[in-house]
Image (cartoon, rainbow, N blue to C red; front, side, top):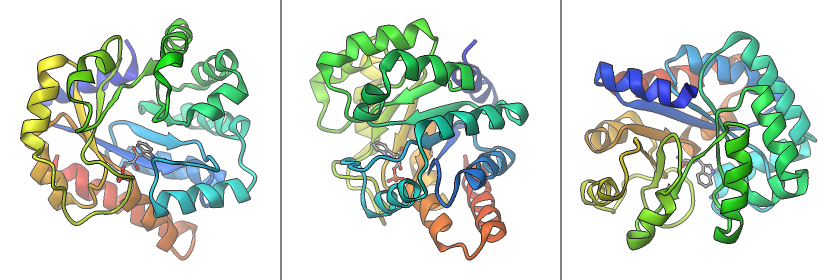
Length: 262
Ligand SMILES: O=P(O)(O)OC[C@@H](O)[C@@H](O)c1c[nH]c2ccccc12
């Protein structure tokens, strides 16, 4: 059984919701990424999203953009990230997902990317800008390696939700609001109605992300979904930490604080 399915099964049995943090691989450096994943796993993260840094991350706001730039300036490349995942897997069985822009996968070679991701221990992929025309082929190759392609829906998707979720695996990434990733005070979308619409089209677990910045917001939205994704608020903590120990401690505390309300 894929680690993602197994995790949602256990959570359902326990009546709990998934805490899904996101960080950019290679910020502040790849060694710290390995330690951050282990720390978040210990803090109760259920699934961890690892961003592959990209020079033109069009769905990202300033916080994640800056984190990506920092990782790229560090010279972090896809093979380094694959190797880091190998190392993480020596110690941890937490479900791992790559958040990767299509161009990175395409340039690396779709087949090679999937093969190496699987071998390293990656369970799924989120490709926010995957063109519909490329989707089928990529899905087939991912399927051959048993890597899940997580579908992404937005409040504007409406009648396309069914098509987007078709053959999707793991969970549906429900983007809370239009716009880019970032820390927000509030979300204007009616989350209950939005989730109800998505449930009409799919039985997959629903994870909500974009703009969820603290445990208060996580608590507010948890009744309507199966998991909460937090990115920018965590990346901000990484940026603010004065040294490696402080960064790891702060992220760990923050992840635990959110997991505790889920
Ligand atoms: O940063 P936020 O607003 O908390 O949103 C989650 C997000 O960081 C993560 O899932 C993500 C990072 N980059 C993305 C690009 C597209 C979709 C999702 C993402």
